[in-house]
Length: 145
Image (cartoon, rainbow, N blue to C red; front, side, top):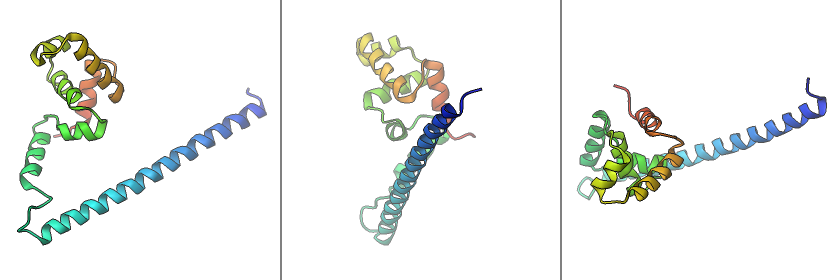
């Protein structure tokens, strides 16, 4: 059985972590509220001025919806959700489609080492360790049909 001072120390550390998590969740919530307010304002502005170039472009929305429903990866989602660079997105899509790093490197005109470096960055950003985990993580981002 741990000693009372050790238990108090653990309790103190846990409380510190919980407070930090709570603070971060509140900050995230506030940022989401701000984003929602900005988006609402933009949508209202675009609907009030239908003759102007609208901020809500139906063609783009339809294309993204089509992409999601077909099970394809949405590059914008990858960029925003995981902060992937364009090169990282390209190799991620290739891996999702079942290509090997070597095949992608040849197709993209990259050295295998460059392609592996991009894959290493993707693995770190998505917190995965292999292609199977990567595919599983990406499938979790897709809506279930």
